[in-house]
Length: 395
Ligand code: PMP
Image (cartoon, rainbow, N blue to C red; front, side):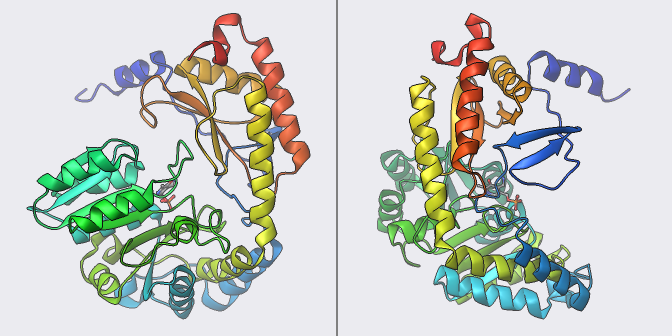
């Protein structure tokens, strides 16, 4: 046997890092049926509750009837349909950028963008807590790759001083495992001053931040000069699938010419673009979804702090409860599940060692009562764990 896979798997199991995929046997939502069990869920990224919106579903069905089910080819061959194009135009207006490019996933958008912009002789600087797809993109690009301290403009500045070639600075807008915001004004100022280009992946900010859901750049009022490369994903607050890159005419044309993960993949089904056009409209117009979400965030944070739980500095629907070790995170998640609540544990290597957590995510489809139920279950679950398992005694 050339590969000893069973030893690798056993090692992962022994380290409490083994992953399982909960099997949904009813639609995604606030109430889910997982492995045959009905649960109140706090772990999806459908932040505005649009994934099951009847108008979005209708747009998808009508789109499939008119355009069929498959994209049929890559965009450059014959897979670029009118709904894709219309969505790109709507996303350009939404992001206030000259142009936007639709991609089939956020992972690909990040790989494609970074590798199209920098290569050998260039430099890519990333926040050390960036999403895996951005870190992978930096490594794959062949550029000099370095990670600066989380959200630290001084640490970025010292790396910018040593940079060679074209320099791309890359950060999450909202950090996916912590929920905090990028310190964008300071990071952009350092980057501009030293002639770099800022790329922001705002997968978790679009829809949630900014009066119109325009994400972190709307929240801080940053324009094209501050953030020339802006990425968003459509599988989270938009409730559908895919991603986009927004920026100048030249940026988008360069991606069409040089971004291999864009060029060599089948376009997303046009019906998905039809659904996203509808969800984009709801996301912009239905401001109540954002304000209700803010209420839930406030309510959760106050209640969880009252229970002595260790929260992170997050104003977003991502509200992790820091637990520490992987086995404690698993035990707390299991204790919640016994009480009808689904919150998945997040463990290394997704997060740094010793920072395993329960990543609670809130959604506009949750009610105040749902959050109260989560808090009650947390209190009971903590009381039921053996003493050494109580998270708030371990940090
Ligand atoms: N960027 C960030 C910050 C993410 O959290 C994710 C998804 N987890 C992605 C990119 C990848 O997006 P997609 O799921 O569309 O591939």
